[in-house]
Amino acid sequence: MAQYFVGIDFGGTNTKLGLFDSDINLLKRSSIPTDIDLECDALVEAMGNAVKELVSDAEISMDDVKAVGLASPGPAQYKKGIIEAATNLPKLVNVPMRDMLSDAVGKPVVFENDANVACWGEFAIGAAKDAEDMVFFTLGTGIGGGIVNRGKLLEGSGDNAAELGHLIIYPGGRKCNCGQRGCVEAYASATNTAKRAAEAVEDGFPSTLKEVLDKNGEITCKDVFEHSANGDPLARETTEETARALAVLCVNMLHTTEPKQIVFAGGMIAAGDALLSRIKHYFNESIWHLRKETVEICFATLGEDAGIVGAAALAKFRTQ
Amino acid sequence: MAQYFVGIDFGGTNTKLGLFDSDINLLKRSSIPTDIDLECDALVEAMGNAVKELVSDAEISMDDVKAVGLASPGPAQYKKGIIEAATNLPKLVNVPMRDMLSDAVGKPVVFENDANVACWGEFAIGAAKDAEDMVFFTLGTGIGGGIVNRGKLLEGSGDNAAELGHLIIYPGGRKCNCGQRGCVEAYASATNTAKRAAEAVEDGFPSTLKEVLDKNGEITCKDVFEHSANGDPLARETTEETARALAVLCVNMLHTTEPKQIVFAGGMIAAGDALLSRIKHYFNESIWHLRKETVEICFATLGEDAGIVGAAALAKFRTQ
Image 1 (cartoon, rainbow over the protein chains, first blue to last red):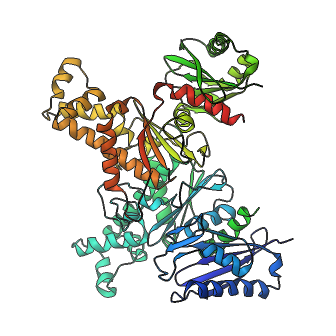
Image 2 (cartoon, chains in turn yellow, orange; image 1 turned 135 degrees about the vertical axis):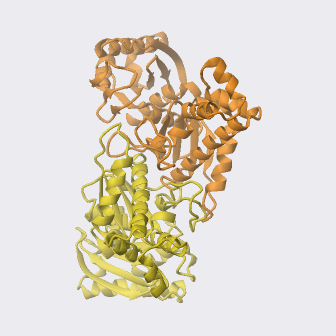
Image 3 (cartoon, rainbow over the protein chains, first blue to last red; image 1 turned 90 degrees about the vertical axis):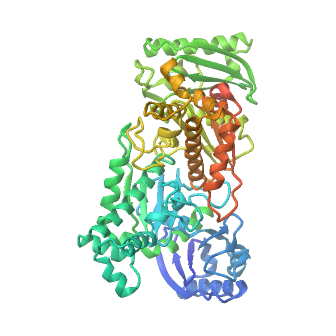
């Protein structure tokens, strides 16, 4: 009986693959560079070959693979399996990626948004494996989101549910790349945390970050958390503002889908408890007094593997 | 075959009942005063008798009634069918209302939050009857919410999903009755729209509403919309602020559960297009440019019947 699953995390730089057993234990992994200059046919062929190679390297027959999960950046029509115009993949315009890959490997392919897939990974075997209801945020260039409600990935009327980075929490506030103002992403993503600090330094606020900016020509989110830990007031206020914004996001999600667990992922969680404890602090300060809330706010546990794990786990769930 | 349903809208002043056929057509209605001084046993007995009387008045046998839906104010443990401590019903503390009523009428009873029930009514046969995904707001003393996702009422880990009036849109802003600051309810409920106007008048802002306040000792939401229509700048700015807050709420819900339709209900929608057109205006101004959104923002159509209709429709859905 076919009992193995392949998870693919399709990114603009690398495509990571993992082979999993039916309990979603990782058996073998591989990675190929994503050649963004390839036409879709060639790109899918390379991906299909990487799947077959991974499986054969593990001395497993393709007959024993039940399904493949593919995590893809957006925007895409996930329900239809079509990549519309992914920002970092210029040649892939309106391509039926899911069905093409399915033809190439001769297996059902489950195709889903990369943030949703990482969310599902944390739900299936990561930080939220005991919760039936969770919300997931990934803090990177932007803020991606995913929602598991009553044991299922929440989907809306189209392909754009859980775009949680674009919840407006400061109407009329900072301009977001999406065109809105005051999105939580415009304040609290890793990129915008760094950007707010850089803007303040450029505006002349005294900070030990000035030296970093002068030397490197930029400030990273890591710099901000490091200087905050070292007591720089500007860096500290910047990280507090990030924690406050993320806490409001947690309050708002609690009042919407009422998760049992809220999981943060992405590069920024490297900041550790300096970030997590402050999010919890502001959450407790902000939340209503009508009842005692027991939602657990925590960090993701799957790290870089969330994409391949989630893709395999979702492939299993949706082909059951 | 049992094919009739009874919907009960249990309120602090009156309890309204409706008898419905299997297509949720209203056949007969009745109403009894809610005697808040009664102990739970007596109150449930009166309610049970009202159900039987309604059914017998319609010359239908109780044998032909399949289930009863009960819309109840909160807070309650809806999944367990227990009223914990409803604000206007002081004698009902930790009472197993659902099972007691079920025993009294000899039928399954479906027990749900009143805002969720009204939401379900609009979904089943009201403003959103063609949508699989909708969000519902009721604008009254507070702002109640309900979410239908993929054809089902969204439930969370407990009994408090879709408390949408308590989404924070102005962190650190106006104090809400719930203990939070900056809830949308603290700005845009009917009560708080009126209150903001009254505060501004008391603060000395010139307005034709001053005469109303002096004469009546209060300003109602209706007054605010009337004076806004007559061109009073303070009243107009107050209603604009309400529309802006509700538009942000719409943007945030679109990015969360991605509804096809957003339905506003409650006393305030009597303001008509003066309110609806402004919510749409601010929504269009605020929403991202990443893709064209087609969500329909509209008003509820069931009016005062939403409770009994929704309760009957939900009783049918959950006993299918």
